[in-house]
Image 1 (tube, rainbow, N blue to C red):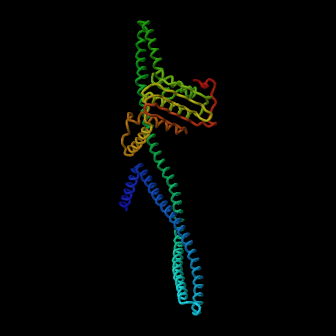
Image 2: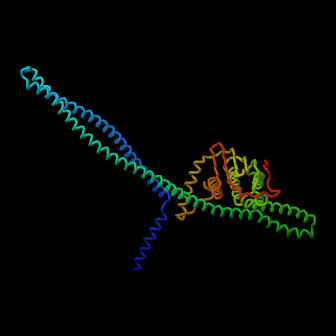
Image 3: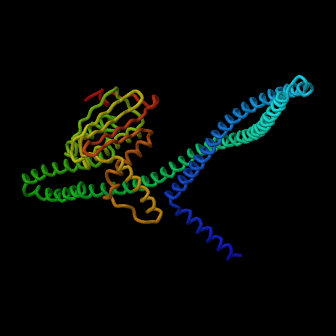
Length: 438
């Protein structure tokens, strides 16, 4: 019994493992093939419906023609019947009075009766055939009508089913792609966090930590110089003050990169203006900044997301555009905040990049499933590609719309539109922000 349970558990585990290894791409392919098969069947059913409708129309016209021919034939039969009776009466009158009519006249009467009878027989035979064809055509038309109704009902039914299934399958495919993207973005975000922590620790170690160690050593030297050479000690203190100032600037720069204090103290617009100024001062990218509209504050997480998106867009300009010039336009509208970042650099193929990002996301997901090591920070998705994916993910989290348009040799436009509800607006405090400054 235990052995049976173990074997069952092994089979269940193997089945679950097979399910876990099911490739989302294979599932999407199956779903798309299912829709394609239904589409083909729908086309065949509509072909049957169209053929049946054409046949019904042809049969209806044929029936009308047969009915008209039958009507004319019946009238001809009635006419010939009356003609036969009249000729018979003439023959009887001629045959009963041989003294008054010649033999040729009597023979003529006989021939006339015979001719009418032959024509009547032919007309009656034609009438019989036409009645039979008419009845058979009516029966056929009735059956075709039933088949047409069934084909029409089936076509409408499969059309409705196809529409429903298409919607549902597209929803499933969209969810699969969303899950793939979320897995990819989630893994990249975790990786980016670790890389950012490593970068900060390295900057602290190579910058302020080294400076502090050096200043600590200089204080011991100054302490000894105080007794022997006060002037040199004073000069060394002046150098130490300059080093402290530089160290403090480095610490502030690290703090600004982690979270700009101006964003909390002054608001979004001044923080972006300060970001542009600092990037220009450091020679990273020189951007023209303009803002329009009556400035207002909104939820802090929205402002942080906007700030990071602009920061990432300018970073992409510096690293990928091939030049260091850009423009940032900011508009405070009553219902939305819009930001446009443009450059006139080398540009790129947006469709190709989106396809590459999607392919990389699927490969990343497969690597995660197989337990393989993910890509390195220097791969295609570690820079521009992932930067755009990250910006779009931030925009999605705050319910914003982000579009990136670019062509090789024609620069890049990043447009962010963040809908703002009236209740989410906050009054700008005195001294914060600027009104439509350029």
